[in-house]
Length: 373
Image (cartoon, rainbow, N blue to C red; front, side, top):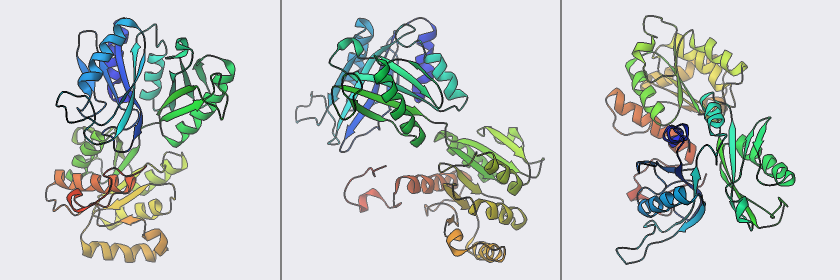
């Protein structure tokens, strides 16, 4: 829902009813992950995607119907057959899509959820997608770290769902939870989809150069909150880095150490050092490589620069195990030349590390395309 939140809120604020379709479960190969969403506005306009085009037309029609009737539906789409007019997935997988009407009446907490997301506060939306009692379908519980609002039908069910939703929120994952009709564990009957909205991951880019501007733009496109940091105020300006959420004038190592002390670096944080200057990059890498929570640490430079940098870091007391965490030279081998191409190679390496990809052409690999999370 995050990707279509602006369009959904526009309908909600205008007092209308939108049809919201959300992927809640995938089996085998699927084009979009759980949480992917599509909104159909009252005027028929569409935002988002649930299948990359395979079943969008069919979902569109159901969404319009759901918005008109007010009755939510859980639809399953599987493999399409040889009939050219059949509706299905050509990738061979199966997806479950929950299609619901969204308005001020059905989702009164939507603005509060949007405010939490905008403020980078972790929040989860737990929605009943299946239940023996049809009146319970569509009911929802909003769960934060310390608060909750709404209800899925009973205090017992609310307690169970809130507890499990916080676990998913902490892990930053979304998925379907199964309970008995009144929230009984190890039972079946009620299915609840929990959509987790953890704060967007951060990318810390050190070095206010042209490559940093291109990388900030690429990272923002991928959903990162980007900070560019450099000790030189003449170069570290917001005008030079419009895609960055913030531009900081500070010594890189001092800024990074301060962020770590505040708990602002975690396993999803990407640290990219592009300074090309030992007096900047060696001190910040000393800090970065000693942060076990940092998810990705990469540094730009030639092979010769890389060897010199390793010697300096060893002299500073870093161990081989700590140095093994360093992606240097930064990025995948794409033959990149320009700052924009280099930014793509860096982003590709971060994606590959996150999902376990090997960076090889898919035409040279076998088995499943999508790696398990």
